[in-house]
Image (cartoon, rainbow, N blue to C red; front, side):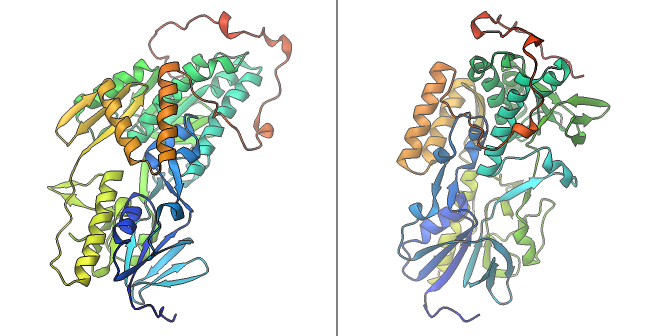
Length: 452
């Protein structure tokens, strides 16, 4: 393909997540370069809050912003396209319908779900990486309660009202806590034949403890907080089977119609076309300047980069990706000006996992442990600060404040797809009396029910 006649250094950035967006912004004022940002979606997504869309706390628009509205620099172009492969020899990015030549390439394509050699599980246990995933999970959860309301068989009704989340990393823990909170505070007044407070939320983890990457003290605190929110936590539970009727681990089986995946992640498959060494998760083992081995003009950042520092892997979290994006932009500018190049150094400002309203655990600057309400307030402040756009910040802050003080939430419990064909036959009116919310007894504070 003939090269563009523009003589400026052409930087192509694939992916407008945290890392890609920071790289594009940092290069936006460089007169010696022109930037092309390629993404298969037209919006930047604030992934850490996806679970709140999935549990009907936030709207999709609250945590997303159009890429074109974020990148205004005159030297930056945005293209809606899906990248297929990289031809490093010819220095072109192959996209759906054509090719894009580059002088420097930045791959920031993020991670996808890994089902540990069981791709068939994806159909019955959706993961949480995109807005489509979040909306799909929200509709799956809400449809389960609609089905339970119609169900005449009490055994099937219990199956509809049982929710299993696989994987107790930050995503699984946050999803379990928010889902349990929703069933006990936001939903009870919506239904008449079922009491949503009787729903079971079960969190399965194959390792010995939840939030395994955190110190043991915080891991134990998170487990206690989850149990206080009536989440049934099962550790050392290696899942061996998932189907439409439930989940199997060891010699136990949980009957459920709703399984959610928060366990494994794998790097975007685009990096495989580089034909360079990858780690077990499919990430590129990058150089100190975050370049792919043997390809000094190809930078790899975020969830697709395997970076070690002080003998420990740099975590796959938003702050790390943002720092990588800014470092790559500086490296490209330094190379063009023939300045010495500096290696990437990750500055750990902390990591937090929120468990529910007022419940969180975290590490600040990798030194100070925090838990409870103080950790939750720090987490909330950091996430609002990172959100793009005044409208997003204001909307999220107002919604969190409303939810915090009312224990309820705004009306975001929407099912937009057609679900009638998936619902059971309508229960006859003689099945039982309609139970108004005011007549429902308070559930006793009890230990989690045993798994059957």
